[in-house]
Amino acid sequence: MSRRAIAAAYLAATFFAFPQPLPGWLPDWLAGWPPFAGAAGAGAADAVLDLGWLCAWLSPALLLLVLRGLAPKRALWWGFALGLLSHAAILHWSYVAVVRYGQAPVWAGAAAPFAIAVQPALCTAAFGAGAAWLARRGADSPLALAAWWTALDQLRSVLLSGFTWATLGYAQHRNPLLMGLAPWCGVYGLSFATVFCAAALRGFWGPPGGWRRGLRLAPALLAAAALHLAGWLGGWAAQPGESGHPLRVAVLQGNIEQGVKWERAWAERTLGIYETLSRRAAAEGAELLLWPETAVPGSLEDPALRARLQALSRETGAALVVGALGMETGGGALRFYDSAYAISPRGAALRYDKTHLVPFGEYLPFRPLLGRFVRALAQVGGDVTPGARVHSLELTEPALRAGVPICYELLFPDLVRRFAADGAQALLAITNDAWYGRSGAPYQFLAITALRAAETGLDSARAANTGVSALIDGRGRVLQRTAIFERGFLVGELRLRPAGDAGTFYARRGDLFAWSCWVAAAACFALAGRGGLRSGRKR
Image (cartoon, rainbow, N blue to C red; front, side):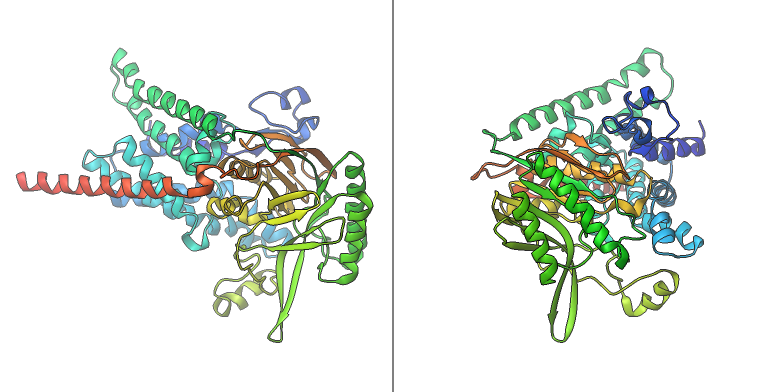
């Protein structure tokens, strides 16, 4: 098979490694059949193709086949091109955000997926160059390649302000055995395991050799079995000794169209929708009502608006955690925050401000340089102010200490685990996925949230304006979820982390495994370099 044909197979495998929506005309019986993952009762209208169980293994294996025999410089360019094309395809939903809601010209929307894909493409290019350099020295072992890939995955959390969408480990979100690595290693453990097995799989595509060719598959099968066993043991060991007390939680999905979300005429209607959903959910026994990101069309620093929600909390007897604008004045300037407010039936109100903002969405990097150009293309307002630090919110009624990651923050494992390190007993994630339209993004974001739950070991509720809203257990299993672009709510129980439980290893130690991959990769490159120098002297 030619290199270009293998490259095309790599692009397809990478795209389908992450959830993608299926056409609504599929019959309902097909929508409910694995590997489709539709919402319960939603039928074909919400069917999702989720092939990560297969394509996650194939994607890095095919990339290594594309790179085979290339010099490091050529491998770098092949890696960049393939990384750019594959991630631009996955990130196609950015066209909707830029053109439909940012009102930018079509050409800018077409360029947006490629602009965002540059960051992961740089890491794919670095992997390609490194893999080719190691291969020339006979040092491209599965361990070296997996460590190098994982180190670059961790780099993506900080490179160019950080962007971890479509990190390979997320493709394994429905693999219950490998998910057991998450409480110890984070999503990076799943990336490592996947690339290690894929690198071992390369031998199968060696020269034909009858039964010997079958034997070349044995290392990959043994590696896969060993890593799945490690995941099973890790998941079993990470479970708390005793379950915390249950809390009945409702996640509300108002399904407010993004185009009218901030119109004055819709403000009262939006509040009315969420108040109605809140009363219905409270009637089903919900003790806490979770509204999505910026569900409130205003700021709760407005006394009248705050009093209205406090009255709703007293009426229902349930606490509210709602997304709204935070506002502060100081130094003669008015600052805006993307905030979450917790309101108890007794009237107390707490606030958490989003700390990691969306570049070009919530703030403009290099505003003096880029501001005029970007404003000429799209509707861009003033910058949102980042919160001072990550911290959990402590409610007294019901008794709960919760981490409330807001939208983009969910992309960063180390950020979310700091909620757990701060004593959070559950995660209450809020987001607004209306920007993405009917694309794979809402389902991919759900997978990201599931990894955050598995890493921290915390049961999680996820409220999204247009979906997907969900209830997720501490192993990362989605217990209930909504269909997208439908109004409604879910009610279920979250098991709170017991007081005194130190949490998962990942919650306590963070990216220790990812940093160890940097050390391992550096050692492999150093040893390969020394070996090359020695062989050069002998010649």
